[in-house]
Image (cartoon, rainbow, N blue to C red; front, side):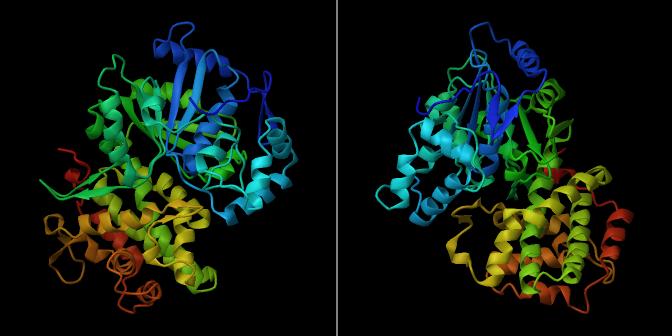
Length: 463
C-alpha cells in the first residue's frame, strides 16, 4: 500500500485544532461488533473517489478514529497520473506557507521540499501524491489531515468492510462494475455509503430514474439493504473547518441507525431516514437549478431582486417535480430547500453557471473542471428533461385543457436544457425566460401539483 497515516498521540490535530471527543472508541467498538470483527482484525473503511466531499469524508473519519490504529484502517482510492499544473502548484505553495501548522507538518514529514521544487517548476506533482499530505486537488485552499492513499483499485477495496462512494454519478457504474470483479470470491458482504448526487434517465420499459445507489446495486449484485445514501446541505470545506452542519443517511434500518451514530460528530449531525432513493434524487435535482441561479447572479450583477424571482420559479418547479416523484412530497420540502439554498450560495454548480455567464468558461471545456471536479448538474439537466418529456407521463395543462408532458410546465428546466445540452441559446436566455410576460405565477404551479394526483411511482422504479 502506498501512503501513510500520521499518528499524533492520543489526540489528533485536525486543521490545527485538537480533537478529544468522548465516546469515539465506544462507537467504533459497537460498529465492529455489529460487523462481526474479531480482535486484531481492523475495521477497513475505504473511500472510492477523491473529490472534495469524498476526501473530506475520509479525512473526518481519519481525524476521529485514526488514533485507534489496531481497530480501524481508513484509506482512500484515487486514480494515479493526474498532474498538478504549475499555477495550482504555485497556489498550493502559498497555502502551505500561510498555515504554520501545515508548514511544520510537511517539514516534519520531510515533504516540504517537493512543493518548493514544484513552485519553481523543477518538478511535477501528482494529485495522489499531494493527497497523501492532505491536499485535495479540488479543494486546495482547505488542507486536510494526511491520508493513506491507494492508487490500485483492487488493492484498495478487496477486503473493505465499508466502502464510501465519492465518485460522480457519471463514473459510479463503471468503477463499481470493476469492483464487482474483485469481490467475486468474498464471503462477507461490505456496506456501501454513497455520497454521489446525480441521476440518469432510462426510458425502457417505462420512463424511470436511475440513481447512484441503484447503479451500484446493478453493477455489484449487492442487496440494497447494504447500500445507503448520505447527503445534506453541505459544503465540504466548511464541514472540515468545523462549521455546524447536518446530513441524513438513508437506507435500511439495519445499517442506517448504527452508521448515523458512528458518523455523528459535535459539528456534523447525522440523522437517519428510510427513504433512500427519493432523498438521493432530490440531491441531484437541486444541482439542475443551481446552475441557472449562478447565471442569473452573474448576468444581473448579483441583483437580490432578480435572484429572488429566479428562486421563486425554480423552487416551484422543484416542488412540482417532487409531486411526480414522491407520494408524500411535503416531507421532502425542508431537506430539498436547505440543500438548494446552500448550493445556490456556495456550490460548484452555481459557480459553474456564473463562470459560463461571465464567459470565463465555455461548454466546449466539458463538465469536469480543473480545481472543481465534476459539475453534476449538467448531466442532471439532460436526464430530468429527457425523463419529463415523455408523453406517458402527461399531466393536465392548467389553461389549455389538454394533457402535456411535465416538462412543458417547467420553463426554467426547458431553458437550461436549450443552453447546456442543445446549445441553442446563450446564458442570456435564462433572463428572457424569467421576464417572459406569459410566464405563470409560480404559485399556480404549486397549486396544480397540490390539487392533482401527479404521483408516478414508476419514475423511481416503484411498482
